[in-house]
Image 1 (tube, rainbow, N blue to C red):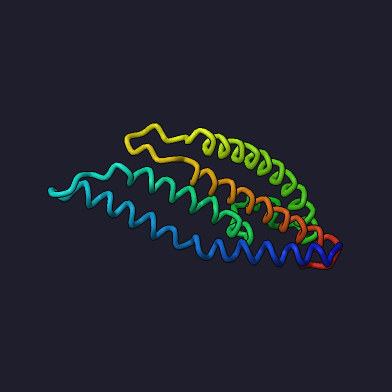
Image 2: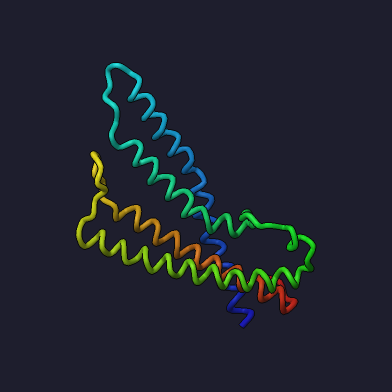
Length: 170
């Protein structure tokens, strides 16, 4: 079983590492969109762009949804260390394994809802009710992919914790 867990952790961590390293440059995409928004609203010979605010919001959603698994992999998530900081590594692993199971349930519910919402957006051509009216399926699909990657990373973290409990860290 440990062999399977090691391979799973290696593959999932590699995928999320690459996705995270690529998506980290999404901040520059958002900056470019918002810069264009500012320029188009201040220059007298251009009309303000209707798409910039929503596009920046979509870029931000992609940025944090796809960057979340990478953040989890690096241990950059926020943790309250009032008690946790003084615990032994084994006790931390037990606690983390329990909380990761709760996280997996939560992400599973989110993924189920996101898949249902994405199917609806595909089936009915759902659009945002704004002046620009963009189709919503691309961002909903990105959310599904991000939730799936987060679920896979959470399982990877669970495997790492279980291996640490057994005394064979991955």
